[in-house]
Image 1 (cartoon, rainbow, N blue to C red):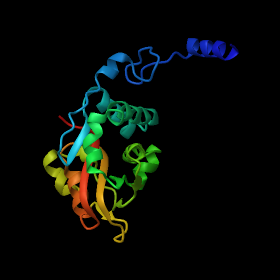
Image 2 (image 1 turned 45 degrees about the vertical axis):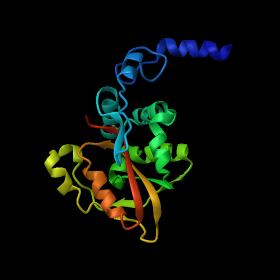
Image 3 (image 1 turned 90 degrees about the vertical axis):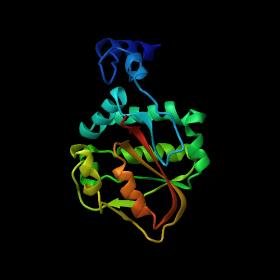
Length: 212
């Protein structure tokens, strides 16, 4: 009874608000913002996204990546679980692919330290837990490079050339699921997949969001 009283006083002075629009609500996202999360239809493409990169999902990713908002990153993982991991139809193609491990596009250590967390790594942990496999740190990034989002689409493939290396040539996977936060042109996934071909027989790529 005392706990409920304290919670009521706390809510009076610090009301719960939507993380994006500041409307009062009982959860991290108000019903309006939640309704704007638009899942993509999962296909048999080797490279796909869970959500369209727009409205709520876009704003959460931007807050996580460029404003160091860990609450936005955690909320994204909750949305991944709600819209993808608990939806058998959405994840059936990944289960059919049957990856033996999940890897992720690495972030340069300086950006990781600045943010305090790593969104692709968080995503990999979430997916790997659901699939019952391990997370592989097989990729490393060589040197800090311009953000892909800051480049014109035609320049992205060239800018990412030589960005990745395999941590150990002794590591080998029959099937690997490679994840990242956003797909725009697919240049990052393509470059990483080329480097991984020496250690992986079959690769499938999955992002939190894909541009329309």
